[in-house]
Image (cartoon, rainbow over all chains, first blue to last red; front, top):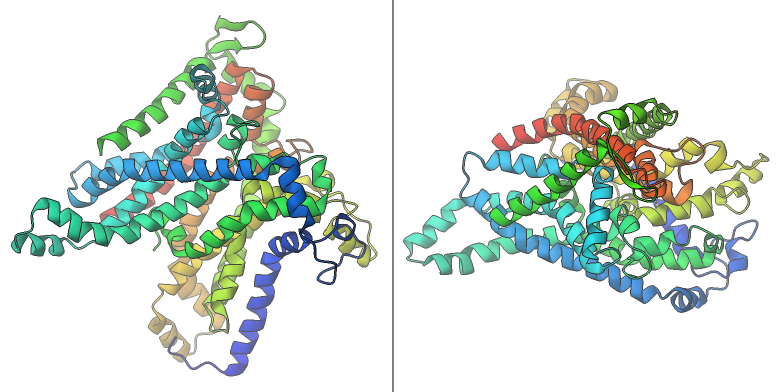
Length: 276
Length: 275
């Protein structure tokens, strides 16, 4: 910003912004802190903030009692595979719409977006029934399929907006220099498309990781991901704050870290290119 | 583009057709199964049941409450984050964090560690000020849900509004400042109009997601204490009481409702595609 700003005003801004930022972040911070407390300290009156006996005990107990690793693995597989498959399916669609647009392209894009807006609960019983018939209930394969389909519109859209930013002149230049179609795709387009594909991958992995309608309704003990694992703490284990916190911290930590890298993509991905 | 279009077409048409089909049947999988066609009976019964209007009201209160909180605070927060300060990047990270917390975790952490009437932090805070602790999820159930969901969605609103503010031409603001426009009138005449499209988009996208919030209610109140939204009511009809015909009719209502909102959003997004 070009305007001269007094140091005093900057100090006030900083103080207010940090105070509000910490207030908003506090529930996450409190959960992380509590995960290192003993159960007695976790419900101490008055609450202890930093000065307690830091322990890692809760983490090992959670793993032993509830087999955290299995849920984690389910989350990784469901979010990871569904995103990868989604990208493989979406790249050709986004590619052709961005580089060879037809009169119908806009309608197809908007129609895809509209499928994202169908309320899940309207499809709950049919999907439930189909899952029972096909033996997909409580399987990772079933969840991968559903997760891929609900995120497909967002994946296509994000890729489309990224691909559209690749300038067509570069393609023409490559063609003039005598590049074959294969070389054109391999050496010119692909390197330029990789950052967009990576961003899309990241955001959709996060969305699939946190999805909590289908994962709660279509899984049980076998294929349940971390969303279901945490929901199982709602009672009575939830009263053990330190263990609840350890389980929660383990469920959100990977995504918090990935999420911080994806701030910019978040805006683009979730507003369908309407805000950049 | 064929595979993607084909998959989405199947994903949309098959459940939709089945839901429509079931909605015209009396279908109780655990009590006799398919009991034949009943015309619009389910549609009428769903709307005339005593839980319908309360659920519509609950849905509107939650969606409306969260929208007001997130948009108002989101604008203020975006304005603040746009100011020059030290450690802006870190503050942004702190503010955005709740969006990445999975819904079941945030619901459970708020329910137990903040809103618990005995051991929750709010109870300690209330006692500190000499007040009787509140039983949040039963005495102020809707407020509690609005608080939890707003916490999750405030980062989204803030981030989008901040992106929009940053695209504002700063010369225009400087010119206004030099002409002696007060901060409030600069906000009202330049910033807010510039933000209007972003605000509209925040409202529309959030409405679509908020109409179908599920985990937050599933984990906290299970729909009791007046927190049964339309989505939760349909879930209960279909999976808990296994009255599929009735639930499917409800599902069709939910689809129509979501489509009305979607229509407005699509118009804006479509306009953007042309430019």
